[in-house]
Length: 313
Image 1 (cartoon, rainbow, N blue to C red):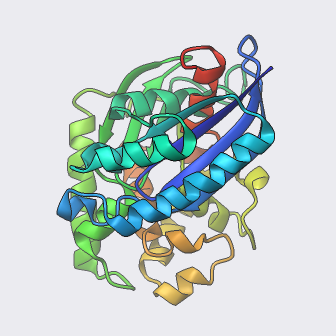
Image 2 (image 1 turned 90 degrees about the vertical axis):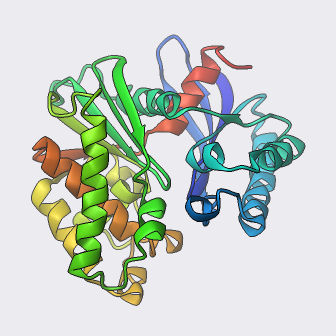
């Protein structure tokens, strides 16, 4: 077993996984998995730059993660930065800060690379199961972008498009509750992105939809009626189209305070969860998926596998 640390810094959150991984069998044992809402992508869609306060929040989280990595003795670390830092004019400032705190340079990966890591992380524990039919469609709904990956044991087609929950919220500024006009505008944006995805990724020619990231897991937690967030209950749960539709409608029609009072809701998702749920619902409607298999394993696990396999020291 190789002890590794994987960090995924996205538009809305930064997450850490420290794990023991067996590269030969693919077995992964969590030692520490945590998430901090830092909203690195605050206003990036409008300004093209990372805001000073967003950088401060992110660097504070990096210092916390550096202490955890040192305490647990992970000597191999990989830091992957995704949508917001790809888009920002001042991303060099971000790179320098992370290098100073963690001693590793963040890799600002492409959307296709992000999709490959997500697919590997999400599907590794599904291989060989008789109740899950391939090919998979893995959908990773992030803050700035959403990744679509189709494959069997390995990804064979992928596309990243800018319809993340934070980006949709900032672009359309829906009220609470959202108006029919606002919902229609967000949906039209998502539909246009799906048209683009379908030019290269056969999202309708798949048998199992696997959903990743906070928007999906939060919708699942609500659909399951959980009073508080429970990763074990959510991981590999199956949520029907009707349940996703019911939860999405509720979120779009609720006030900020009503969403904040939901037991499984992370405070940092209150403002953006409705748009994230609408992305999931629209994808299910487009593909005809009758259910989504929810995975707590995602890009973090894919990054950890890559470190343990020796693709990155």
